[in-house]
Length: 86
Image (cartoon, rainbow, N blue to C red):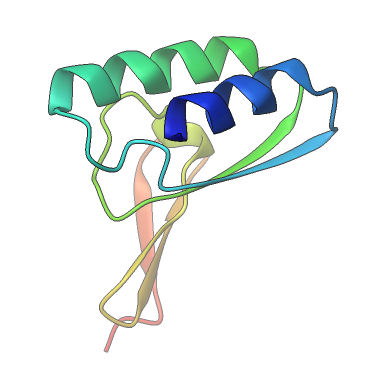
């Protein structure tokens, strides 16, 4: 069912796409392949990907990590800045 939902998302022309755990229940290699395909397919759309898995395929310049009361934000130099650290 998850594959059908992802395929349906790719076929729609929505300007904003929300993907909630699209890589759940996939092995690491399959998850990385899916993310790579999604990055290409959705490059001209605003995409929000919600996941608990640290996925290497997501470009760090476009990523916002939340956890342990902190927000990790990308900087212009592609480094990371932690704000609100406890």
